Image 1 (cartoon, one colour):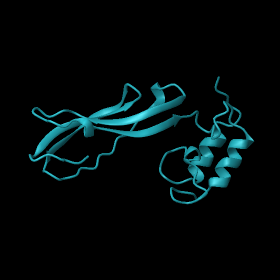
Image 2 (image 1 turned 180 degrees about the vertical axis):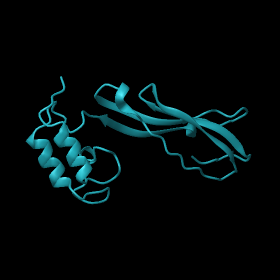
Image 3 (image 1 turned 90 degrees about the vertical axis):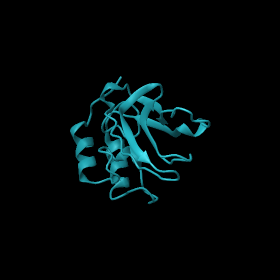
Length: 142
């Protein structure tokens, strides 16, 4: 978040998956003009159906704020998938294990990076991700 105004501001930021709040709001306190704040939100997807969601961050409007168009940042589409179902076909099978193996030791920026193979969302495809796929092997999702 960045303060484009002329005054120090305190405001809340909320993350939405489509129109549903995806994580508790966080407060940015005393952000000086031109200042930036980095926030980390953890989205527990257990209550969300498998599918694609548009993820966005929305900063509250400050009283007297004239320009509010930059209060919303749309991150883009995020897929909530069944753990281990890398190719999202509804079953965890050898195709998914092969996809995790192909992405093994991958991270963002590498050609073999596959965010769907990063089961624990830690930014790397490693043994933990393979273990999640193995634990869910042959499970299906309707």
